[in-house]
Every structure is written in structure tokens, then in C-alpha cells.
Image (tube, rainbow, N blue to C red):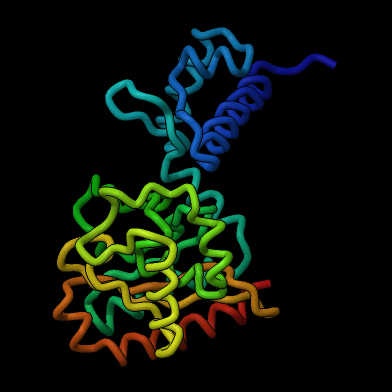
Length: 253
């Protein structure tokens, strides 16, 4: 059977996106046009054309002719194919902004990384780096530590054993798995995560896990903003986050 040029281009484009996404997921060195062509056994000129088209679609992005990474449209499409909870998360984030005037996020974990899945609309100016697909560390963010809620001390040691803590995070960031565990034990006693300047100076983040109906952690929902504003409403924000997480669990299949 003859394969049309359109379907061939689509197939090759999907191969490129899959390779870029996989390398980013596993923390491997990202690739440019020539390296992608070599890995996939494709002509460099064809890879160059396809990657330009994929960048125009937002499925890939590239800064200053550097290596390619997955673009915001890639994560938007992935979200749209997910179950009802992620669609309902949009309304929950809108409600959080309306109540508290702070930023809201829904994130998932991939190993030692937190991937932003959905954010409120008050995240910054157009072109801000805060967009779906943004990656942050799991050990020094509120959403990240909420995603580690069920990890034992041994599990944390295993997960974080090869992490380089030096120079990462804000002034209150943990610098060893044992310190992460201490923060987790403190937060479990009150039922929600408080990340006070762990990732950025002057920023507090409150977070709780979102669970599946059978109790597994699916994602995290968080609120973050100026330290003073968050502290003044900490208990009310936490209660609102817990209620939102419970509602989203009902939509998680």
C-alpha cells in the first residue's frame, strides 16, 4: 500500500516528539537537529523542516537555536486526553484565585521532577516561563512534597540518593533526604504541606495530594504567593485545598 506524504510526515513528526519527550522525561541530554536526525535515521533537512513545523504548533520549543524540548501545546493535548479530574481542575483553580487572589497549580510527579499540568490564569505576563510542562524539583516545592506524602523515610532516601541539592531552591530548601523527611513528618502532623521559601525567596506554597478513588496519589494541588498573604490565611487556604482535592478524587477514574 502506498503511504501518502502527509501520513509519512505525521508519523515522522510523532517520532521526533516522542524522542524529545522521552529524553526530557528521563533527564537525558536534549538534542538539536543533527542529533535527532542521527538518532532517528532521518535526513537532517527533513528533521529541520519537521521540527520547525512542530515548534510552530507548540508541540516542541527551542531557545536560541539550542536543543529541543516539549512545548506547552504537547502538555495541553496530553491533559485533554486525560480523565475528567483534570478538566474539573480548571474550575477549582479559578475558584482558588477568586477566593484568595493567589496563584494555583495542579502538578504531577515524574521521578525527582514535578511537572506543571495546569495553572491559574494569574501566573504572570505573556511569555512567562510558568506554563504547562514547567519542571521544578520534587524536594523543595510544596506541590513536590505533597506528591511525596506517602513516601517512607527509606523510600525518600532511595528516590533522592543521587540528587545534587547544592545551589537548588530557596533559603529554606532541604539539602539532604533526611531533611526532606523531617519536613514531611512536620507537615503530615497538620495535614497539608507548607513550603516556606523552599523554592523561591519570599514565596510560600501550600499543597495537598490529589488521590485516586483507591487511595493512590495522582497529583497535587497547590496555592502559592507572597509569604505574608499566604500565612495570614493559611488554615483557610489549606481547608479549601483539601476540599478541592477530595472533589477531584471523585472525578479520577
